[in-house]
Amino acid sequence: MLALLFSAVLTACGGGHDDGKGSDSGGGNPPATSPSPPAPPPPGPMSAGDAVRLADQATFGPTETLVASIKSKGAAAWIAEQFSLKTSRYTSGRGNGEFHQYVDRPDFCIAALEPNCFRDFISADPLYWDFYRNAVGQPDQLRQRVALALQQIFPIADVQGTYGIRNYYNDMLDGAFGNYRQMLKKITLSPLMGDFLNNVNNDSAAPNENYARELLQLFSIGTCELNLDGSLKGGKCQPTYNNETVRAYAFALTGWTYPAGGAVNNICRPQGANCRYYNGDMVPIDRYHDTQARTLLSSVSLPAGTKATSALEMVLDSLVAHPNMAPFVGRQLIQHLVTSNPSPGYVSRVASAFNSGKYGSFGNGQRGDLVATVAAVLLDAEARGDTVPAQGGKLREPVLMFTGVLRGLNGTTDGDAFNYQWGGLQQRVFNPPSIFSFYPPDYPVAGTSLVGPAFGIHNASTALARLNFLIWVIDWGGNGPHPSIPNSNGTNVDLTAFASSAADAGALVDRLSMMALGRLLPAGSRASVVKAVERWTQATDGDTWRLSRVKRAAYLVYASPSYQIQR
Image (cartoon, rainbow, N blue to C red; front, side, top):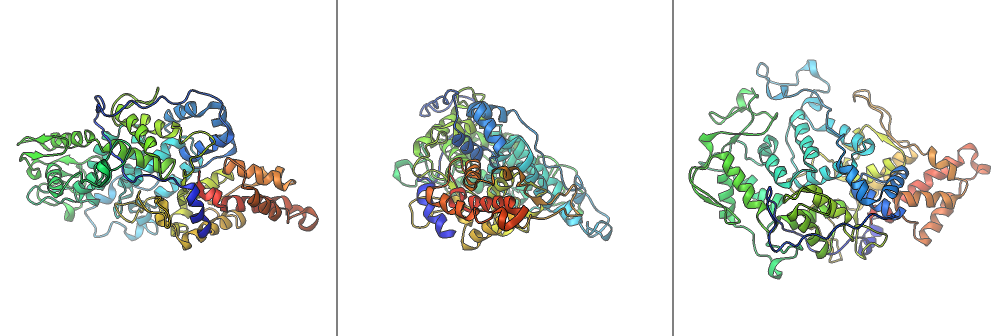
């Protein structure tokens, strides 16, 4: 399968540049060099294939009902409807801050709270239950997909406190259709990010540069000067900042501590700072904030005596005014939702929507508006229609394969299996290995000039694990409820709806192919799959022959390179 996937990449992943740049101020007009984005296409009939494409890009996987709905409403109307939905939340886990408020015992997880104390109060494990339940079953699919993209742009790891982790990812859901500037502010003030990248209680006497560096490198503008279309300005990498710039931002962002409420005595340091606590945004603490004059990017200067709150606003102003932000952010959203290697024109059009805050009727006109940006990503000519660009598409990352199979085959899940049991595919959604998330946006596809971000976690082992997952959930029935998980229902699929097509193996294979792929399998592959499915007959297999045919057809369609590569 690994060899098939790599060969398929030559026609299934797009070519292009790696970074993008753009501008995102809280409001105002875009730079004069940023043209207004073209209007979205007018409403019109939508093919089943294009409806499946949109379901792949904007949801956690097509279903027969969803494809029919998108097809009948049209892309723009369905997307507008999605923007209005807000139903998914993270609610699982126990406690609302108690983990960081105990003072009378050496270990929070005393025997009386075992055996699931660490899991329920401290770890991210309960969020897996909510994430997969929501992804498979909740209607606000686009909000969840954009939140997943933001989650990978702003990853955190090695942070403990279930209630705080829950808050952090609910902020992603809340901000998915907001403004990127506000999202940056929320991330900057997050006590979890403050812990992860050492910006909480950052002292002006010797500021830690970790968060300032990643704010520039990963969260906002990238390392190289870019054109609006994401290409390197001047054809080579010209650095967007140097170490003195990083130090200026580190000084500007000093003087923030945890929100009030924590009470763990041995973590209440330095003197005068609040104890570790994750309910709320960080708050300023003047004694540790730098007040010297500092020079930032985009000709923004901090005058001497600037308070921490004002300094933060000026930091954000300097970033959103930078011409790198729109293509840098826009290109990553395209990669997460549509294609690994968008053309320069595609990046430019999305960046223009980001800068203007408008895309047709979408957006509020403020730079960085994510409704306008996401609409531009999904309604662009390269995203819509039945003709996929020659090098368009991307490797389907593990989480989207899990959810796509479950949704397509009428499955349900409590999410538990995708934490540890199938974590070997290297995408445990709440446990990225580093600040670089699971894979870099410029990961090269071996033997090509293309990039394929998800190939950063794809190898012989994970390719075989994909097949093993399909065998487990389709042939072995997944798993049943777990007694220690609230409202557990296990993970399984329901194939009975497809049994009505099983008498005609060709019709069954085509039905599954159209639902999962939006097109028929290639002729040679289709013939082989049909032949394999026809092996089961009533004469030789009795009453189980229809279900056996459905199992084999489903396995072969979802295991095919045509599915593993999202087109």
